Structure formats: C-alpha cells, structure tokens
Image (spheres, rainbow, N blue to C red):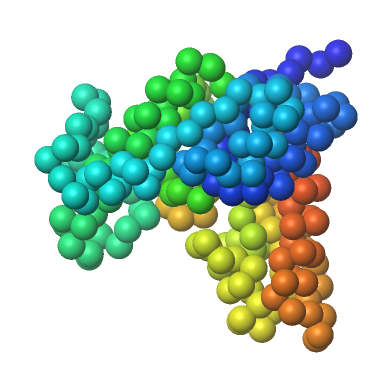
Length: 253
C-alpha cells in the first residue's frame, strides 16, 4: 500500500468538490487522508458533509472579524509576525494604484482572520491544503506560512536557488488564464465562448494566477443556459480535482 499524504480542506458553501474528494479517498482513488475541513462561514453544507464522513471541522468567521474591524478599527490585534510593508510588496490581489488605506485595511483584516486559520491548521502538519470552494482570497501572509517547505535547485552554472514548495491547491471554474475571478462560468457564458472548462492550479500571490496542474473542457451548445454550463463544469470538476490531488500524492506535480 502506498503512503497516504495528509491533506486539509477549506470550504465556504455546499462542498460538492469536497464530497468528490471524500468519496475518492474512500474509494482509494486518492492516496490521501483528510484531516480537517475548515470554513469561513458557519453552518454551511460543506461542514455537514465533512462531519458525516467523520472529519474534524472548524470555523473562522471572516464576516464577524470584518464587522468588528469596521465598527472599531482600533480593536484589530495584528499578528506579531505581520509586516504590512512586506505583504504589500508581495501581494498582487489589489491594484497598487488604489488607496493605500484601503489596501492596508484589507491586508490587516485578512491577516487577523488568516492567523486564526493558521492556528487551526498548522498543528496538523499538512502535506497539502485543498481549497474546495473556499471563496476568500489568501494573502502572502497566509501563503508563506503554509508553503513552508524549502527546496533547493542548482542550475548548470552551479548556482543554487532557494524556493518554497507549493502546498495550496485550488479549482477554478474557467480555463485559465482566461476569466480569473469569482464567476468563471458566468464570464465564459456571457462572453459567448463555445468552450468552457475548469482548472486546478496552485495558489500564488495573485488572483487565480498560480501554476496550472490540470484542466478539462466541454462544449457550450447553442441552446445551453448558464445553469447548464455550470452543471457541465461541475461534473468535470468532480473528476479533475481528485485526479490532480492524486498527482500530487504521487509526486508528479
């Protein structure tokens, strides 16, 4: 029997991709053990799916943190290891021409929520974190603390470079790099594309811009509605995501 990797999952809603991953682990299509499912939204169906499968769950309520920060900005207690200038320089989520105060407020509130997430996640010593419909963008503060495995590369000139191993995987409802953002299927449909699809990729500092691991495509017929497009895409997502996690487990990506 092959060694199983340890994975954690994050959801924000119904968790249909999570269910596909749970089922694939149970059927031994993925050499992995799901250690937890976390969410930014209390009471979502994805948490129920995890609990039914005997998986530990937790919630970090982003909305509550944001509401508290808006009502009383001085109540924000930033993590001791948070450096606003470092994170601003790395992040590619917000256009740097926007107001500095807006950028800093976003990054500070995210850091508070992400520190709570990290406190829940890091004790598990994961091999891979899987975003299974987690609708919050992650900042460099969080990413750097998950991608904590340092790798080395020596090129033909005997020059050593140091980099961090990607350990956060996401699925996106479009054929990246086309249509990044939250409404990939909708953007594909409204643009009039005749082919739609989904992409599994690693998370980096930008929006849906990390290295691509796998993709699937489907035809959009003349009579298809947006709902039909979404149904076609989801059916492929449930196949593709487990396959890409298994590639990771086998060291192929």
